Length: 126
Image (cartoon, rainbow, N blue to C red; front, side, top):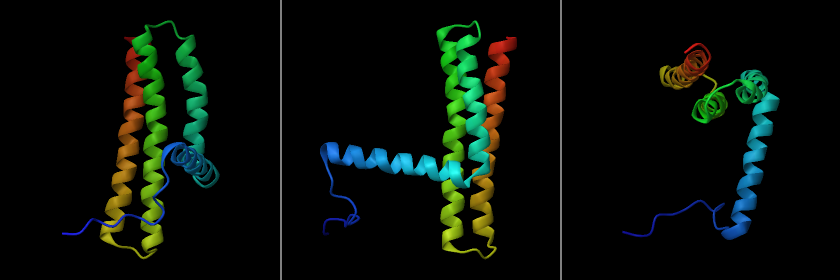
């Protein structure tokens, strides 16, 4: 067996790889903010909730959970949007597997939002 082939776009190492990776990540955040209404809405929510987590009188662990649950919704939305973009790139035709992929991404975000509300509810109302 031969060595598995890697992407021709790989090959950078060290600090160059880290700088490139940071650039790609920032490009992804910009694209999500520019093209995804849900990501913009969740960003606004996070910009409210994360500072609020530092105002609420609570333990450091509870504060970490408040911040983490807020960031988790952004992470989930990025992954959901990536799934949708990849599916749409493959084909814009209706297909049961495309619908399943998109619905599962949406379901992941629903669970993330339920988690967000649950964590905030428990911390605030005990």
